[in-house]
Every structure is written in C-alpha cells, then in structure tokens.
Image (cartoon, rainbow, N blue to C red; front, top):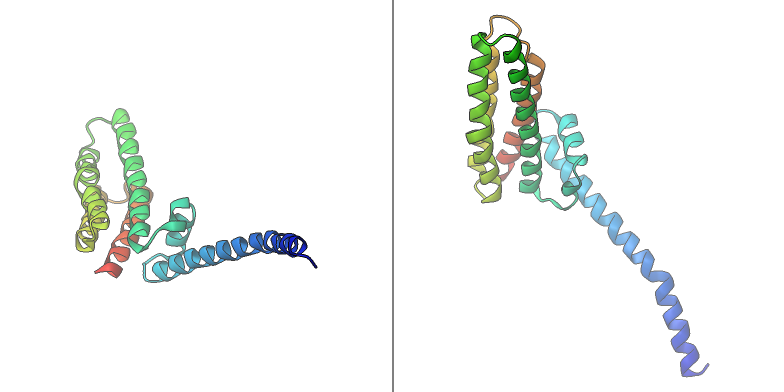
Length: 176
C-alpha cells in the first residue's frame, strides 16, 4: 500500500471509532451523575423525593454536592412561593383569619431570610449556613401549621415544603 492509501484508511478508522468514544464518555458522565445523586440522596430523610427532584432538573447532570443542594433549595423556593400564593388566596376568602396572617409572616421569613441564607451557604462553601437556613425554614413551616387548631388548610403544602427543606439541610450536612 502506498502512503495515501494508508492515510485514507487511517482517517476512515478514526471516523468510525471517534463517535464510539464520545458515546462511551457520555455514558460515563451519565453514570457519574446517577451515582452522585444516588449517594447524596441516600443520606437524606426522603430518598425518593430527593432523587425525583434532582433528576427532574437538567443542571444536576453537571452539579457537585453543593450544586445538588442548590437545586433542592430552588425546589423549596418554588414550594414556599406556592404556599404564599395559597395563603393569599385563602385570605381573600377570609381576611380576618389570624393563623393565615401568621403563616404569611412565617413564609415571608422563609423567602426573605432562610432560603437566601441557604443559597448563600451552598454558593460560598459555607454549608453550615445552608443547613441552618433550611432548618430555620422547616421551623417556620411548623410554626405556620401549629398556628391552626387542628389540621390547617395548608397541611399538605407545609409538609411538602418541610420534606424538601429537610433534604436540603441533609445535603448541607454532608458538606460540613
């Protein structure tokens, strides 16, 4: 074979096997993502909710543990905002209901102090702040719930928020 034939054959072989190496690399990255999510969620109080929350966010594919914590804090932010919206809706129906007014204050603190503290803690490599912020957020939801005598109209939402907040606090604890 002459040199040009060998060169053409070499180029063809590279073109055939190059995509396979990219597939292999992508599979390895995907497996690393699944492993990190699995390992992280195993130390949280709600494995299934943790996994489903993280896998539903495409950023988790490239996140480290702190990044996974931030993703869960974002989920908590959405849930807290949903609770505030529900409270406002209920207050339109019954503006004098004191427990709802208390809950407004509790969830405003969650959104204005606790969640920003947690986000900052995860972003600034200070996981203790992240843990404290999410523990505080859980306490605010508990206070909201206990301001009612008996079951509140927010029980399920408060529980959902607390579950996600506890996951975020557990992820922060991994980093401490």
